[in-house]
Image 1 (tube, rainbow, N blue to C red):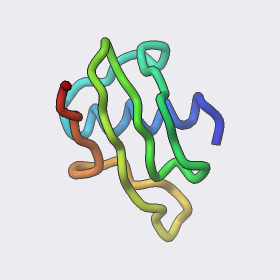
Image 2 (cartoon, rainbow, N blue to C red):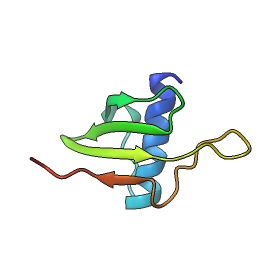
Image 3 (cartoon, rainbow, N blue to C red):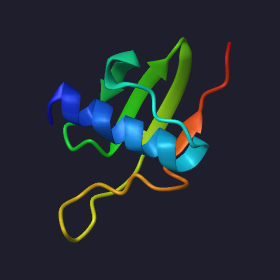
Length: 73
């Protein structure tokens, strides 16, 4: 997956879970697997973890329950 595709998945998950979708250029990728089912990223210094699965049609589920805000340390 390209970085742009990973950012789009993160954007969709944020919109689904929290009701906001930051612009793609505000999403900073920290790490991800090659399939796009795991993405660690930040937006305005806040870290989020996306963890999902690939659906039968080959798309990645980015709905409710796939993302969580990481605790600040």
